[in-house]
Amino acid sequence: MNAPPANPAAHHSLRRRLLAGILVPVALFIVFNTFSLYRQALTLLNTAYDRTLLASAKVISEQLDVTGYDSAAQLRATVPYSALEAFEADNQSHMFYRVSTLGGELVSGFEELSFWTGTIPARPPYAALVDFYDDRFRERNVRVAVLLQPVSSAKGRTVAVVQVAETLEVREKLALQILWNTLMRQAALIAVIAVTVVLVVQRATKPVRQLSHQLQARREGDLSPIAAPSAPRELQPLIDATNHVMQRLRHLLRHQERFVRDASHQLRTPLAVLKTQVQSALRGDVEPVQALREIGDTVDRATQLANQMLALAKVEQLRQQSEPPLSRLDDILRAVALDLSPLIAQRDLDFGIHTEPAPVQAHEWMLRELCRNLLHNAIRHAPPGSELTVDLRLQGRDITLTISDHGPGIDDELAARLFQPFSAGDVRTGSGLGLAICQEIVQALQGTIALTNRYRNGTVHGLDAVVRLPGSWPAAETHGATDTGQ
Image (tube, rainbow, N blue to C red; front, side, top):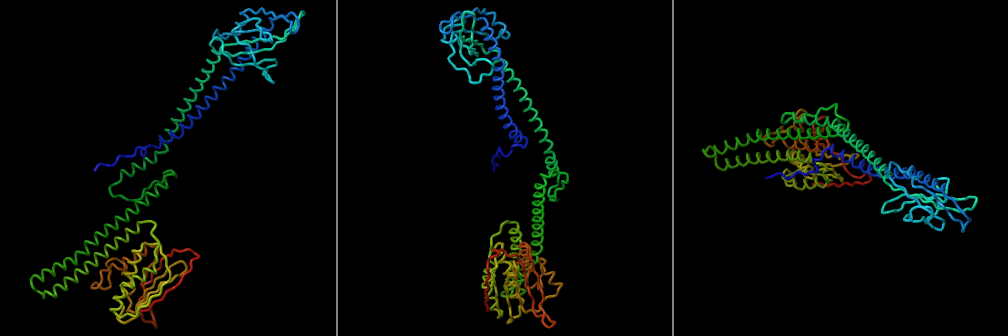
């Protein structure tokens, strides 16, 4: 089966992400900044060259003469074009002028230059009655300065309107030159940032590459913790999480190896016994009914062993799962007791059970298996006709389950050994996995389990199996109790 196509987005390198994350905002800012600088440069250039236009208008105004006063005044202008050539920059721009009366009557200059119809600003930029504006002249963009110049002589007095227009070649060329120089510097800045990001990322990711080489150089099956004391602080959470996962994998592999080893060892004995019994029955060494009864007992023990080993493996599987559901241990305990009631009646036990609401953060199967194994062991070892009590109580925020029988008790050495797998008190009646399963379940639930002899007047009066588990309920919740006798 072909592997699914890889997601291209999953292969984006850290270098590419940083370059995009840094350079895109910087480039957008540079575009905005460059546009602002270009507009600012045009404004400054206009200010500088507008001063030249004003100077040209003043030169022209000095060439004016007047005869008559006010509305009867007659303006005369003798302005040679050479008077404007001194203000044309490098012969790249061209200047045009127009001298008019306040009424717009042309006195001198270019008639195509439209008469000014604006107003003088309230605060002109210079100490003169001057206005500047943009216009079109002979299909070209021009910048125009308008000067209202009083003209007086011994023969008259009036006000002249002097307009000087200049084409924009020099201004635009200088503005573009400034723009180009700015773009070159900004491009150099972006290149420096890009190179810096690449070098910094290359250096910053060097520990990651070293860690990757270290893992690739490991032998197959090596799940020892990663030792990287010189790794950056930002990598420590990843290293710790990886070590935690490898520890879990190491534990699972060890459990699997132990399970396979124990299964092959423990199942070999009942299978060998079963084969011997079948061969004996075929030879006629025993009666057929007795042979079938012995074969049935062997099959039952092998079945019980296989079921318990599967249960032990399932405990480990559930242990690896997070966020177990909330289960009621009291309900499960009473249900298990009801299921085992035929065995209790068969041994004529005086059975009593006391429970309180006991919510536990655990899988229901684990709690059921814990209760069933403990209660089944107690029923099997309790003397016929004796008392058997089950007590489930709350102690603070902990839950204590105590199963008490009136049997002969156990030796201290045997009590410590019974929680090990395949350590049975009586190999004829058990496989030695019941208490091992209980201990695995209790440890998975962060609890404790113990077998304690109960003494009265210095003699053993029975055995208590005590399990303590952390409860899970709101602090304000109230608890009740239920008692049952059988």
